[in-house]
Length: 441
Ligand code: GUN
Ligand code: ZN
Image (cartoon, rainbow, N blue to C red; front, top):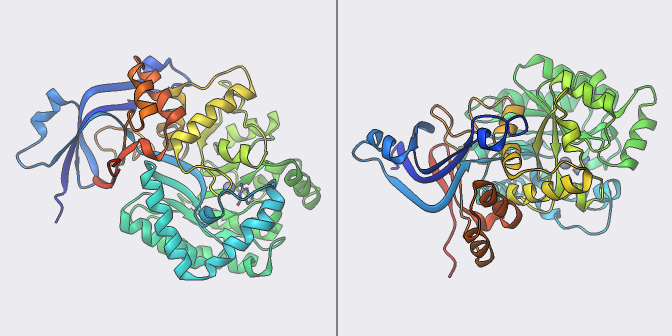
């Protein structure tokens, strides 16, 4: 029997403001010797150890993480759990990559056994990488969603997921119909949305694989149940955009296809959004939707460079989060993804992504974008107790670099450029430790 109350001691970082709007020194809070007390899955107290220890009580188990840096758990806003076995598939851009590698992989999820085993591996990999919340695509098979949420519920993680809708331009064994996709989604929503920590996302794969009727019915689902998310792909690849134009010749843009079906609300999550017009960005600003920057995927498929600082332009800021986009992405680590986002920011323009900004995108910024900032993404009393414990000395290379890092920004930058799953010392979910890295031999 594990006690409902736990505490952890160590340095922790969290945000009191958006580092894209405020200087990093004002945005980021560092507690050098901090104490975080958790009870029944929530943070009850946090602050300097010397002050907060008075609230510890007699028998609260205390875990000390000296020389580590604790953050709110990472949020991966775009990832496909069935695609982990198709990671590192050689040689193609988006559309042929889907045909050759992804559709055959996803077809295996007709089997509940495959879905269960993959969901278990995927979620344990997320936790090994310090990721505690993700927006996840399942497959077209409803049982792939049940398998995923069953495992997430067992672990106590807060996850967003949904059944892929696709009723054309894909292999027959992966096709639903507008009506069956609607009915299956409605049943899954009734079963899972708001059950414990699980949240549902209506998930049309992208405009190419859905008829206008299916997109319309996806909009109906969203209008029927408040608080639902919508996730899909947008403007990722030039061949994809040309195909969308020929399938929807009467729409003014790719985004307009989704907007006309009512899929562009404040809980809409669009993956990639690389090839965007100013009009598209302005539309996203006004509708409150979220764009997901997936740098490792965009590099791997040669899709292009997301224009982060354009998306965030202060006169019409658009919500942005980070995604690993496995299996097109090449790492499940948000640290590695932050490091690639930094490199892409140098490729794409003159504004350079800071470490504080990258950490914001992977935690509090994503929580804001997903309207979950009152629950996750920050270390504060009342927040759900999802934490990751980073080890800046995880490897000999990191240890020697971290020894020369004097500022918090430098410590964070070292972690994001050199870090991955090895740099996650431990992960806490819902007030319990769910991953502890085995010590190197
Ligand atoms: N567009 C439509 N489906 C997919 C997918 O599975 N991965 C990526 N990266 N883009 C997509
Ligand atoms: Zn994707």
